[in-house]
Length: 202
Image (cartoon, rainbow, N blue to C red):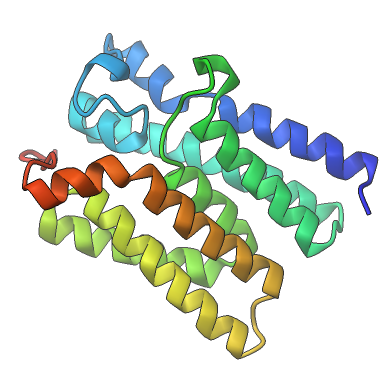
């Protein structure tokens, strides 16, 4: 059953998710992400164009806008399905930002933040996978896709062990599908051998 707190928090999550932290961090350094690097308004492109320190700031903002509304939903004792819709609204805001004419990033960090609130074990497994894969390949898209795949598998295991609620597992699987779809241009470039690779990390 829909409630006023649920509806209000879902709207707030979308609006918070719409705040383009990565774009703002880059702009503060004189860079328009839409015209630089990969053209993506995400934290990885901030790293590519503005350096690691700016990346950490952008990543923190993008993760918090997924985590904080989701945590608020949990603190309000909303049911798991309502918590999931709040997290999904934050992701939607990031990918279809009202402040960017309904365009945006690929929701990896924002989805990771929401997942960190719902299922920390799954999120940490995904974060570790991203770090290791990126360290080996230096390709952000490969790291993101690998992290999404691992999160999907871990969610299935935890669901089977009755550690993770079904609603949260469905959120993970839905996020995996969304991330793959949002990375379809990267996948095409990977197949063609033309995907952007980080040559300099720090």
